[in-house]
Each structure stands twice: as C-alpha cells, then as structure tokens.
Image 1 (spheres, rainbow, N blue to C red):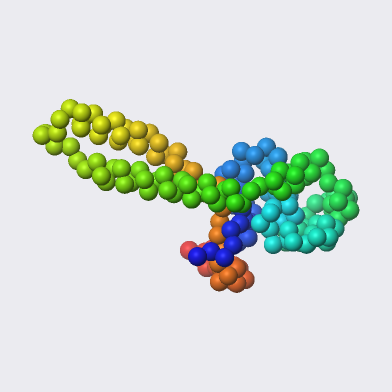
Image 2: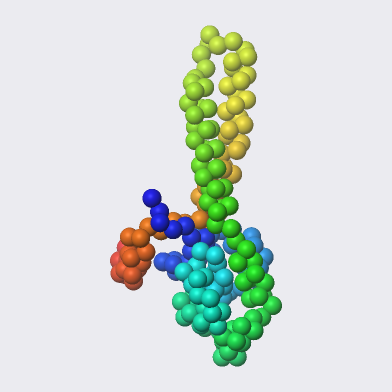
Length: 189
C-alpha cells in the first residue's frame, strides 16, 4: 500500500517527458504557458504534495524549489524569485498549483476504477446471446454492450491519466536515489 500520494510528481521523470506523463497539465492554461522547468519549479514550490510544502519560510522554499527543479532562469528573474517577486505567469501558476486537491483526485481515481470493475461485472453477467433468447433479452444485451463500448475509450483514457495521482511507497522514495543508474541502463537499450 502506498505511503504517500503525489499529484503531478516530477521526481524520476525527465523534464522533456513531464507533460507527456501528465497530459492534464497541457489542459490547464496556467501551466501550459510555462516552460517545463518553470512548471517543475512551481510544483516544488506550491504543490500540496511537494516535499517542500512543509517549509514555512517562503524564501527558503523558493530557494530549495529552484535547486530541486533545476530551473535556470536569468539572473534577474532568479533574484526576483528568491525575493518572492514572481512574474504574473509564475504567480498565476503558483496559485493554481496550490489549489490542487489530492484528496479529491485520489477519490476520483478510485471511483473510475470502481466504474470500470462494475462495467466488467455487467458484461460478464450478461453472458452471451443464444438463438433461444427472447427479443427483450437480445435488446438488453445489445443496448448494454453498445453503451459500455461507447464509454470505455474515455474511461480508459481517464484511468491512464490518473488525475495526476501517483503513489510512492517508502521503498520507492529510497529507490529514487538510484534513478541515474536506471537512466544509464535505459539509454543502453
């Protein structure tokens, strides 16, 4: 069982793969207008599931977020960030990121999984049609399968996106230290 849930967690993901991993980020205007590295800075600084969110000194949190995100703004922009003078785009993204609700997103993910299981149960219980089935049974079967078939692609897409929720166990947290080794072997494949 996971120890922590994270929303749009960038840890262990190459920056160029971040938006691909979480397609929802492309649909949120405040995030889509930022560079990936700026967005990852915003994640570290303002995401309610960021490891830095417990840092109460905003100046220290901004410094640590810059470091962890590897965001390399111009010298002037960096100084402004360290003084908490955010550009309008960063300020809007920080506000939007801080309003993400992990509890709601986790519940939504669980609800989708439940709907999928219910669809599976319905299809399994319908069985198959035989020539002895009456017209009402045939109509019910056809209607149910058509409706489920229509809904499945969107349901699968939403399940795969997962509302930005990822889970990390304590062991996975520790394993993140070995990411450079994993990336090395992936590059050899």
